[in-house]
Image 1 (cartoon, rainbow, N blue to C red):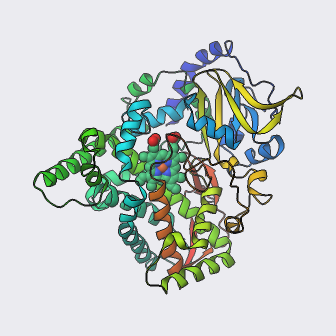
Image 2 (cartoon, rainbow, N blue to C red; image 1 turned 90 degrees about the vertical axis):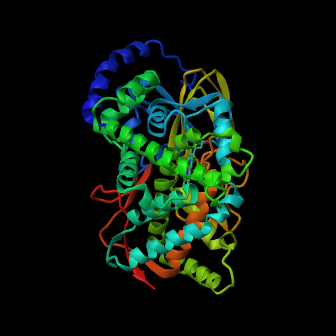
Image 3 (tube, rainbow, N blue to C red; image 1 turned 135 degrees about the horizontal axis):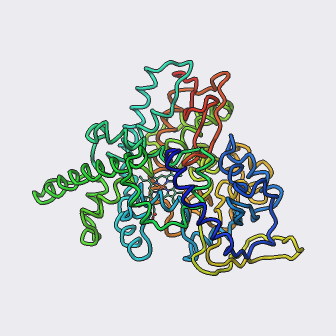
Length: 511
Ligand code: HEM
């Protein structure tokens, strides 16, 4: 969102903020936390705009434990939660919802009829229908498409300079292509350049690092969603991108649905894509063509950058850890010598993916608001500023909390004293955290948990297995001298170079 728009919104909303401040209630004042550096911004800038993600947050985690209190803009209390039981409770129950601008952006970018924006029965209906394309069996059928996409990356890398190649665009094109073909039976070329370009631009939309964005984000949930829906008609670059993206998705979606329906009516053979799987299953009468079109934008955007970013961070770790890279390559070469490759049966490959997903969750934090008074259970007791031990935290309706996904995945009592280090062997020596089952994959919350758990997590894991297998079998990866790439929080966790670009430059050599 552009700076002028934020400035207007900020000016208009300051009076609302001041008014609401006087009504603020908080039941978490006795929870300990760091002193606030400013009334206006609280800890928001330290949390969200630090050069490397976690610079401050991981220190707070060490100092105050897995539940503590921060200040956000205008002196509001925010509960930071990295405790596994508390996270499980918040994600699975109905006492919390997405809050603030996160909620607004989900609604505006993905659409109010998308599965991620929908709630209750409507969410369950859409999710049940879409799930047929994301089961373990369905995802295995997409494997040849993933292998084709991986081969395309290999060809592109053969034509790239060995000394320094940004791997990122190759990965995003492959992940977009995989979604397009596997789920919608359409090649990336048929989507058209404008659609692809607008998808990339949309992903960048909430990636602003202006300080004023922090203020508007705080005020966002005091405005009804209708305000923002009307605002999308304003002639700004942000809203133009949202409008164009949604127009193009509708147009392409309608064409795909029409073609598939015609094929089905003529009795032509259907593919294994999402549409065909739904059409041939007992959910066919529970979902309409319009429902499918309403999910396309979400599915294209949710699975593309997230998977590409995770693989990119993984390759960066391989470049930094050449000994592990050699071991992984040896496992891959052994597998190539067998009659059929079984990705799930490769210990180092899977340990490596889990470790990358653990250290680099696409959404390291996510904001929620209590929609009713409730009590959050804790796995680990905390001691309050008055010396009281608590194993439950009562919170009032309206309390803002942050799900600290990245921090949960680094809590030392769970993941060990080397929890901030890249160590794939933690998944092989039995030291990984096994107690509370939280997310769908390896006790990690990078795909979240509860009813809105990532629908595409199996899709993403298989795709990562295939891409990494092919890349490591054929190329070696080393760091580019003088290039420092760090994880930074923009719209999600992204690899950012010292010159501020979203890129992962690597020295890549054919084996
Ligand atoms: C490493 C890759 C991925 C990561 C880390 C990831 C992470 C997430 C997270 C954290 C959410 C919850 C968002 C929220 O509720 O605020 C989510 C939801 C979702 N993801 Fe993924 N995702 C990945 C790949 C994919 C792929 C490949 C697809 C599909 C092709 C996909 C489709 C979805 C959908 C449809 C939802 C909404 C589910 C619902 O609300 O019921 N994701 N993802």
